[in-house]
Amino acid sequence: MPQRDFDFGTIFEGLLSGVLSPERAAALFRDKIDGARYYLPNRMGETLRDPLYKETTDLACPAGRVLDLHWRVLGPRQSVIMFCLHDIPLVETYLTAKLRDGLDEFSDEDLDTFLRVTCDKPIHVEVKKAQARKLIPIADLLLRNSPDLNRDIAEVKERVSAYHFTDDLNEVLDKVEDGLATGGDQYDQAAMLKHLRTFYEELHEQVGLKLRAEKVPAVVDGADLTQCRQAIDYLERRGVLTERMKALGRALYGVLSEEGVHALKSDPEYVRLCRNIIAEYALVLFFELERRLRD
Image (cartoon, rainbow, N blue to C red; front, side, top):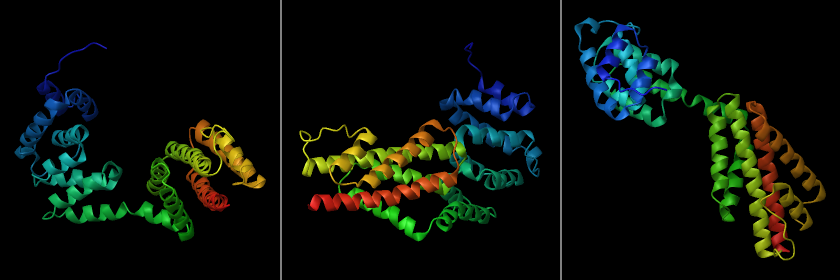
């Protein structure tokens, strides 16, 4: 690709004239982001102060395109702060549209900033509604998952911490819980299955290492605990898992390996099912480990 230094003024005028779309102009400005951080707020302010745009609500007008450019290059938080310095209908129309149609673009911190800088503006009410809408997926998750299952996840995390297992285990579980709360497309669901598979593998490894440290030295059984199937077989040989639990553990790992590694897409119902089964299985595994350590 040929390299060329583009003048910011040329890009901006191209946007105003309609020759460059906000997407294309944003790509050019992002290529020189340090300079864009100073240039864009100044030019945006000049544009919004133009009497031509004092009353308009047309987001397709040149000033509307400038707002969109600023948003794409500098992000929601800085844009909200800068936009709210201008009390004109176009700004309120743009921000209202973002709250309505682009809520996923806002982090919780972005919305907190938005709420703070609009405390004396009519749109403040819409920001509070948007924050409430962000809670809908979490509420839906709680409705779909019984309180007992949520308590099981919490108990698994407590056991992980009590045994001083690697922090990665609980971090992976948190990623799955966050993912289920926010939803996402089928690619996101497949990524959560990969997280569950990672949790499952590391759980068996950590349980095996605990047993090895306290009951079965490596010289007695040198199974490679980093290999999940070997770890499951090891736990059965050493009296933690029954034959049937070993079969269940291997079957569940087979499902996670097939769906969590080879599948590009998955469904939330499938992820939820695997998460629930793993939580119950993990509690049984901890119970049997404790029994074996007491022997």
